[in-house]
Image 1 (tube, rainbow, N blue to C red):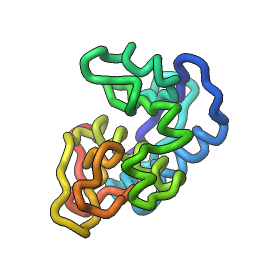
Image 2 (image 1 turned 90 degrees about the vertical axis):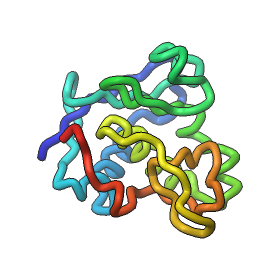
Image 3 (image 1 turned 180 degrees about the vertical axis):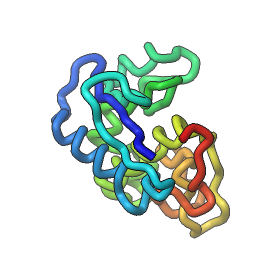
Image 4 (image 1 turned 60 degrees about the vertical axis):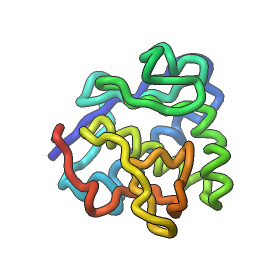
Length: 160
């Protein structure tokens, strides 16, 4: 299955956009991720199946004042929005759990794309277990171990 996406920015972007594009594409096509749905993710100039947005924190709520905040990333309709502050520094919960910035970037791209694929949020299955990628790991690990990749039980989509 070919899934296409375009990349846009909102607000003042200080992060390296080429790095964002490269790392996001690598995450989307990693053998540990959503590519297990027999999907190949390809960036296109415009349009595509969804739009991946790197947004300045203050620009995130513009997508949905009730569903998005300047604190985290979110997904609204066709827009998979990555909060630049989170991209550049992860979150206290993630950093406190010993996660790396690169793994956070994998997780946030996988989590928000997971919403676009049709997933809702999940909870930790038990202390010490890997967190589902659809758990809000940015906020609280709930006793789980940080995990940037979808679990086998998460490998489905209502969209593709």
